[in-house]
Length: 188
Image (cartoon, rainbow, N blue to C red; front, top):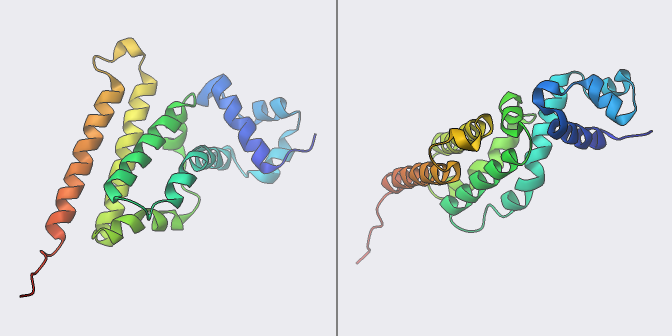
C-alpha cells in the first residue's frame, strides 16, 4: 500500500480519535496503514515530528480560510473568530488540545502573517506578537481544561466561560491599542 506523507498524517489523526494521545504510537500507525516502521521514519524522523505535523494539519485545515481573509474587517473580530475556530478544532479531536500543547511550530515565519492585521491596527510588533500568543494560550488552556474534565466536573458552562474570558482579553487589547494610537488632530 503506497501512502503519501499527508495520508500518514490523516491516518494518525484518525488513530488519535480512536486511541487518544497516550495510545498513539508509530507502531500502531504502521499497523493501521499496513506498513512497517521504516516507511514511517522516511517521512517523520521521530514521533515528535509526526505530532508536530498532526497539530499543524489539524489547525491548518480550519484556519486557512480565516487567515487568508485576515486583512479584511476589524482585527478584534478576526482574532475572536480565530480563537473560536482554534477552540472548536481542538475540541473536535480526542486529546486535540493536548496534542497541540505538546507540538512545536514547524515554521518560525508562521507568526508574521498573524500579526499583520494587528500591526495595521496600530499595535507595535512586540505588542502584536504578545497579543496573538496571549489569545492562543488562553484558548489552548481553556480547551485543555475542557477536554480533561467531564461535563459534570464543570460547575459552569465551559463555552460561556471561554467566551467571557475571550471578550475580556480582546477588550483589554482594544483599550491598549486605542491608548497607544496618537489622537486625531483637527486641522483648522
